[in-house]
Image (cartoon, rainbow, N blue to C red):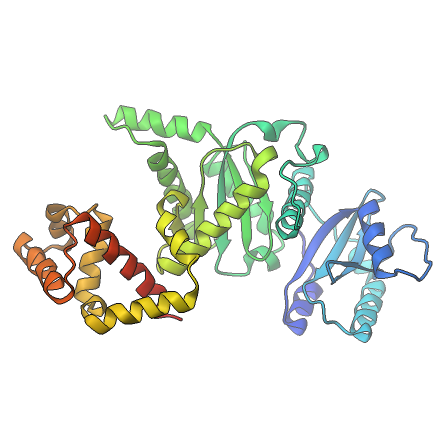
Length: 379
């Protein structure tokens, strides 16, 4: 997506994201009519600098090919009328510069942008639709099951780098397969759909190695490999989530909502993790629904009885113990300590708190305490 330098500069001046969108001419006229409600204006072909409004946010026309309109959206609803007039006038004076502003470099990118905008609209709607409009299903291609990923960058690459879409799409086609769909969302979010043949390839490799993983393990393996490639070759620090295969045409909105929630909960409860899997955060989802005041009060009550939970050695021990399904031998091996040393630590926890993590009921309580402690200590 080609982004002129002046748009980057405007973003810095306004101290808010500035997005490039692509609308149909009819969509543009609808937004322009709302912005000028009661003025009696009749709208013909969009002119550079012309103002419209969408969900209270200013839209400025950049150029049109007669069917679509390249639009600049400013993610602030409190611009003064003077600010709007000045921005519109400036764009109007940049006609020669806008002639080279080609917008999406391909039909695929253009459709991906429209799908991304449709997803955002549905997520913000009180009555969201679940199925993509016919004109966005890419001739029925998106009714086939695919594997969904959500990529969230820690850096503003998706908004400021002109060739970000092209570069990322090229890398994904090399790593995943030619048959992928990349959809830009808000901020530094990218929704990625890959072919289910990736699972078949993974299973073949596992059988050759004499192993056989579950669907969840195969998805986690694919996600891990994709993360390593993205972190090292394109975007640096980022977060990546994956979900079960689904039909994009009928589950685009719900899948995006699930993956967003997965990344949010993963970053909140497991600081330092960069790969997030929805089937591993059921307890976190439940705890997040508890009011913050109640979470804080519960942790304070627990810590009044004993501060052993905040000791780094005990914290690291318990994290590893739960990660390895409460297996004493494997935990001792991973921590590079003698089995008796591990048992001593667990006995110390039992003596000070009355909770024995080798018992299922107590293990669940300690797991909950640890998760709540992580989020309340940062509150």
